[in-house]
Length: 104
Image (cartoon, rainbow, N blue to C red; front, top):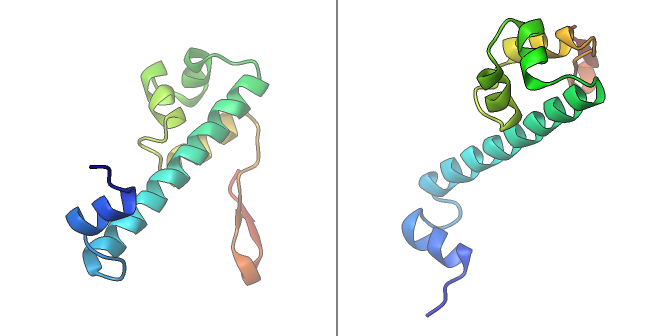
């Protein structure tokens, strides 16, 4: 028998609107955002013609850390700031009505 993803989520995580499902959905969205950020780091690095090793040296981390970042793992605001600063790219946060904040 074939099941849809929604049927499996309902059965094993909880129906939409339950606290368990809400937490699952929030964590899933956070993972997706992290992957998009990782892709942006990778594209920016390649646009600057840098290897992961070269970017790591500029940031002060090992190549493995850059690889994890590009996969959307271990991303913190502090790390993002250091990575984009090392590449000379301004990091802007859109704060809605407050406006944009430039971190580097």
